Every structure is written in C-alpha cells, then in structure tokens.
Length: 373
Image: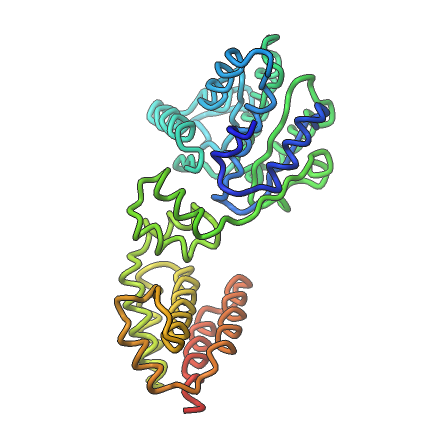
C-alpha cells in the first residue's frame, strides 16, 4: 500500500483519509478531489483506483490490473475530459465520434503521455467544456461486463468544466450509483459544481505543494534543468502547472532584469520611467505578469534582508551589487511593512482592480522605502 502512495509528493492528509476508507471497505460511490491545479489530484485518483483494486491474496493479478489502470485503459478506467465539439455532432453521437482524425490522434497521444506522467496536463485545442455526450458515454462504460474487476473508476478531470446539461446528466448517475462504480471528480473550482453534486460526493481537499516538491517534480517528471526548476518553483504557489507556465511563457532572467530596472526608477522617484517600465513589461507578456513582478520584488526584498544580515543563498545572486548598494543607502527602511503592503496589493489583483491603479500603487509603495532615509 505504501508503495502506491510513496510516488505521490506530499498530500499526506488526503492519502490518510483515502487509506482509511480503503481499510474500512465502505467506499463512497463518488468523490471530489478539490484543490488548485497541478498539485497531484489526478495522480492520487489513479493511485486510489489501484488501491481499491488491490487483492493481497493475489498480488500477480493485482499488478496486471494496476498496470491497466495506470495506462488509463477501459474497462478499468473511464477518463472524461473537456473535448471540442465535432462537426455536425448531435446528442446521439459519442463524445469522440465526430472529431477529426488529427484531434483523435492528438487525444490518444496526450492520454498516453498522461499515463506516463500523471503530473502532466491534457490540453486539446478548442476543448473548454465537458459535453453531455461525454457523460452519456459513461452509461455504455457502466454496462460493460467486467466481473473480474473489484471497482471500475470514472475519473472526470476538470469536472468544473461540465456544462449544465452534463452536470444534470451526471447527477442521475450519482443519485442511483451503479454497483462497483466509483466516480472521482477532479477540480480546482469545486464551487462551480452543482450543490446537489457536491452533496452526493465525499470531498477530499488537497494542499499546495512545497517549493522543494515542485522543484523535484519539474526535474523528475519534466526533465527541467535543476537551476531553472529552482527559480520557477519559487513563484509556483505550490502548483506544478504554474511553474511550467512560468517556464514556457517567461524568461525568468529577463524578469529579474525588469525587476531591477523598475526598482531603480521607483526608488529614485522617477515615476514616469518606472510606470513606462511596468507598462512595457506587461504589454510584452500578459496581465498576470504584474503578479509575477510583484513576487519578484518581494524575492529581491527578501534577498536584501539576507544581505543586511550577512546571510547567503540569494535568488538575485547575479544582482548582488544592487542589494549591497540598497542596504548601504537605505539602511533604515522598514522592509517587513512593505512586504505586507505588497501582499495586499497582490490580493487586489485577484479582485480585478484596474491595472493602471495597481501599477501606480506599486510604484508609490516602492518609492515609500526612501522616506526615512
């Protein structure tokens, strides 16, 4: 049993709950695995499916079934994911029947990759909804004759992307749960599921990963170079997918340079130049890049505190001289108070506060560091 859980990074509380459920042999027919994207919910779903289909008296048979589950093969596992709508698709068609051959091939490749790397993500172009056809296909899966399998598992990934029709259709299955069928709804937006669905599921909450876990997953499962994995994990907020997005969308070295340039302008009260630096950076990347820049500033300030106290291990190691110059000139600054203000500013971003207001607020917050010097 421990071998099944050991490959999953962290999530000890979730694993403990699921282990106790397995031992009790009173398994609920439906679960919601809830937590932010890229923290191991899907991987845990796969391992739990293996655990439920473990027969201690017949380890050889269990291993064969475990391999089938790991490969996401029917009739052991039914994987339901967002799919594009096929040309002339009707409610009588299966979810994939009218999809182009190129999409089907991409889907097969990505499911295969997901079976190899369960921390990866399936992403099909134009797939932003779980269709009612996909939920209707579940009925065909349920009707398959499989006496040799203890539990057959239906994993609905990104379950919050079910449209209203799909959710209502799923609800019928949850109200009359078939024998030997377990539904695992994986989502990072549980609140978008119907209350009636939530009430019929056992909710398992998952926690963000530590920076070390994100770094190790990036190295082990995505072959990311260790130094880059280290830098990306710091701004991942405990999510492997967030870290991967940073790596693919941004040049972290370039963001560091933008951070230093912005700080120089803001500290010198060159407001127009500071605003121009921010505007150029955001327009060249994306709106959420402001959040990344704020986190970079906090990281630089953290390095400044380390430098002031003669500590090492800087994130901005290549810009050590800026830390030393800052501490020599602004040795009376209250960095802790600024950190709190920057945390608040970052929270305003999530509330869709006007971007220009956020940029100006950030400039004035940094400029305030020089008041007492």
